[in-house]
Image (cartoon, rainbow, N blue to C red; front, side, top):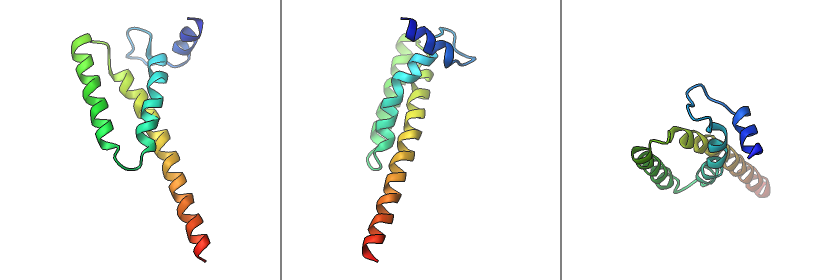
Amino acid sequence: MEMVNLINRLIRHNQDDEGDFGIRVLIHIPIGFFMGFLLFNDQGLINMFLKYERNEDAHTQDEAWKDIFGALVGFVIGRMISLGLFVLLIIWLIGRLL
């Protein structure tokens, strides 16, 4: 529990009323990373995740924007890594042809 409190103290947001912003962001980063790492067929996963979070927030009022923010951070990281690997693959293939 101390680790959760430490994370929530380090990662904060002004609009967080419950004090759980940090841990919820960190929990959802891997989900966003997975969605971002897939160069193809990621739109369906993104739509499914957003619909799930909006539905959950409508029923539980748990401030789903925190989860979406964490997934967005993971998505950007995953997309940058996957695009970087794709560029390296293209460079490697061009080098093999020359």
